[in-house]
Length: 269
Image (tube, rainbow, N blue to C red):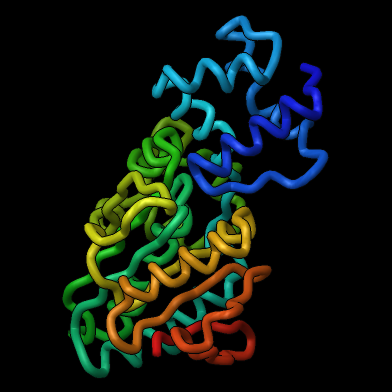
């Protein structure tokens, strides 16, 4: 599929308007690879025809956004955020309360929220009675990613991407050449569809927010808006964890940087 500069610009504007993702220059190859099957199914020759059709077909629009936003993810990605959660945040928070609420934004196919649930389970096993109520709200814009996450079944290749062997034995059941997350890990996680451009007010308030490896796709203004609205969802003294390549900027009145060596997290002021 050949994409003209004008068609690419039109599609890029559309994508940013509906989901906030700002495609970089010369990403025509990415659009072509992600949308090839949809274009073929709809018998469309030009990207501009697809944009026109999406204006009156909401289901098609959802499919296109789905195709452009579904990304690969890993278990315990970057490792240190989960160590920080286990060794610093849970002991600190559980010194004052026995419940915890965590929001995992852009949760994709479930690896991150289920990794968080496993950390909570490990903490509870080692600290009986310290934590008696946990809730993880996991949100994503992709309906297909959420469907896969709710199913909680993964092939051997997916499990090989960051999952410790002892956790496979402890937290998965082998079913028909796939591995299913155990009910005690899955039950803590509530999956919901959410576009980060829309309101967060119905999600609730959180002790910790994981918003990792998604802000890199947004403009600086939109990133600032999202971080400001996440601040409103954090409980007093709550923590925000960003991706390894993401940094807080221009919001010194809202967040205090906390060095964890390795890793940086942000406390709500």
